[in-house]
Amino acid sequence: MRFGAIPHTEALRLAIALLLSLAAAPLLAGDGSNSPVVIYYPDIREPYRGIFMDIIDGIESELALETRNIALNKVALKKNQLPESLPAGNNPVVIALGKRGVNAAQRSSHPVVFGAVKLAPGQIPENFTGISLEPDPAVTFEILRRLAPAAKRIHVISRPQRHAWLLERAQQAAAQQTFELKRYTATNLNEVASHYRDIFRASADNEDVIWLLEAAFSRDKTIIANVLENAWKRNTLVISHNPAHVKRGVLLAFYPDNKAMGKQLGIIAKKKLAGESVSTITLLNELLLALNRRTADHLGLKFSKHEKFDLIHPPQ
Image (cartoon, rainbow, N blue to C red):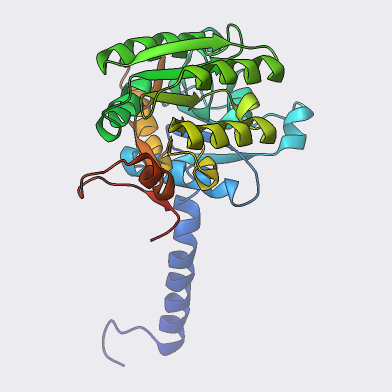
């Protein structure tokens, strides 16, 4: 045996130990236990789980560091079995996704960044900041103006006091795009139906837009069917934030780009880690766009070949 050589059996033992340590390394490094950012997200089934995974991918790609991700079980939260408290050191930031994430983060004394949930300014705790799951009217109306240049009026029905803060922003955004925003309130479906009758009675070809903002009203099958039937007859445009509506005949739907939302949340988290001030609430401005091509053809709308649609129905 040459000087310094390792016996065969000893070399084999060392090789096996090295392989085992390499196999274990990702498990030890990948748990994010020392990460300054913790993400709470709901433990739910596919396809909804995939939405939160896309958001988390966006967060991690922006932060360029591993996060500690905690899936929240609905039953455990009901029993008040919240995740373990975070260490006081390392200036941690909690990112709370969905209602479940926000509920779990309520007791945190650390900065909390929320996302994938609809929150109004008056509902946000003092240490919270983030992105409300409401598309920014400034973005949606800018796109609408580009795609429907003849449109003049946007009609929206909501519950009293609900969406008031969002509609104030929408009022400003509409004025910037030379739209007239006409707001109506309703407490029940009969009032909703009455408003729609009045809107269609006074509508003009391609000049009126119905904005399906209130989910409780647009979920009603009779209401949505009547809106789309009359919109077709009266050449009225209908827009929504639910891409499923496009299959039913809605012209345009603006909906979240989940990975881009995650990147925005990552930017906010980085600012919180750096101790920078951040706006309490931001609206979604990274949006995907769905189009019903048949409805667009019926309305006589023509789009630039450079216009990008993320979902087109019927498929080409």
